[in-house]
Image (cartoon, rainbow, N blue to C red; front, side):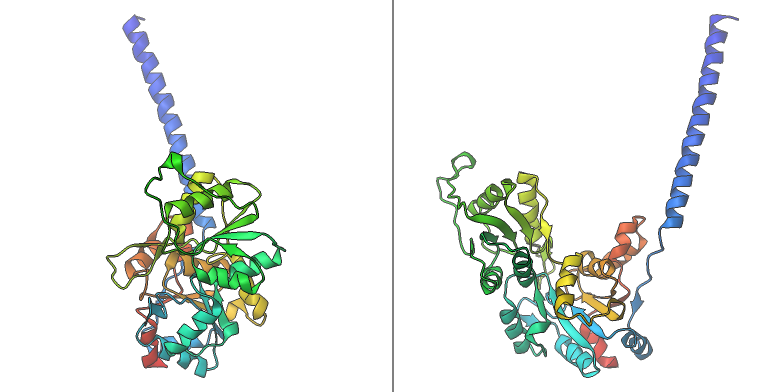
Length: 347
């Protein structure tokens, strides 16, 4: 056999071998996909509450309501049209209501005042902002040091109610002479936790101090919530949320935060601590943020209602429903509406 024929024969054999390997790999991938498909439950198909019959069937399935606030009940200081009427109507039908918000800018007392001013019926023990969940968590672990806050007075107020000292709230301006290598930072050795919430006075000194404290492994790193953005009346405006500051501190320190808001189970445990009568199977979570409120419902065995008066959109919901990633299916609601006002015509 000539050299040419030997090379040809070798190449043919190698091609056959590669084809067999390729076929085996493709078959293996198909089997894996098939097994994954069989083990992954199909995403729910959201129900539009667009008729009296559907709304009545919806009402018959739950006794307890957990409602988000920003983007559901109000945007900034303006109530969402018809939202107060809908919530109050649901109460008149015997439904229990609690307000579960990742907003940490206010105390429960301040949120209570806001709800009443906007026409919502509410009692103080029905209010659960993450400023409160943060204070409850630190008290529960016997925390006795100071807290450095990247956030607003709501966190400081709730910590003070629990007898916990804090610092950091308010402006902390960047001096003109500051450069990254010239940052002057006064470190308080009594600080044992950094808590991050929404801060409209975020600055380079604040982030520097937060990162410096968190870099110490003996300092707790707490995210009152990690929402990436904040609702704004103008949909063209993107307002960074606490998640942006959390991500910055993570990037610098390599530390993972302790999350105390939605979508995590700890936040639901705080609510159940005060309301042990809550049956998750008979509870609906109402929210505007698919990646937070709907996932919070899924994580805690609740049904979910998505309203489009805040962050999320109908297209977002459809995209999560059609996604091949099972994790995205947690973002799909059981029910949806344009806003709570749509319920009023059927209540």
